Amino acid sequence: MTELLYRNDAYCREATGVVTEITSEGGIVLDRSVFYPTSGGQPGDSGTLSWKGGTLDIATAVKGQGDDVVLLPAEPAPLPAIGQEVSQKLNWDRRYRLMRVHTALHLLSVIIPLPVSGGAIATDKGRLDFNMPDAPEDKAALEDDLNRLIACNMDVSEEWITDAELDAQPDLVKTMSVQPPRGSGQIRLIRIGVGPETADLQPCGGTHVANTEEIGRVRLGKIEKKGRQNRRVYLHLE
Image (cartoon, rainbow, N blue to C red):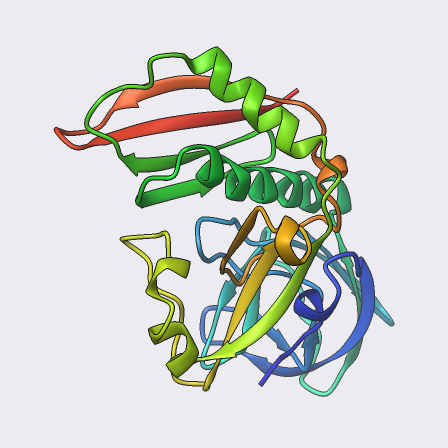
């Protein structure tokens, strides 16, 4: 299985790796990866691979078997051989913006404490779909609350619990449509804040900034009605 370097250090931008597989579709699997694969509403990373005698642009990364990360080339090109050591480098500006948006969406779920039925993350904006029959009365007040939370400069950290511990705390799961992956015996939680000052704690496998101050100011965009019970709330980086 691929060692998930991005999980241990979301700020790891470059690393070496060894090619362990070339898939039938021309995807590249390494023994270790700084590339985050598309999942949980967060797009896969882009970047480059280079090796002695070659270089390759990576358009995105997707999940393979188990914990494998499959890197998809941007266009047809010669591939490294199995066993070849390569240097991997992220498109860091893109990844960092995704980290800022993802962390901001966690805080959006704090100021709108309703079940989440979907979500998506992009480099300049993100959105959450809430089980929200009625539109918010004061969007400007929600935006102010969100920016005040961000300005608290809260640390963002990870911890792990067992499946049984999560079952005993079902309120940790805010998403109705996507459940935390089970089977490994451990589930990753993202905590924003420390101890009694915790603002948010929920299962998440994505990449995040280390402190909320890195998000910067955000603004709330459109709030769209998506069915009788659902509304889509957009968030934009300033």
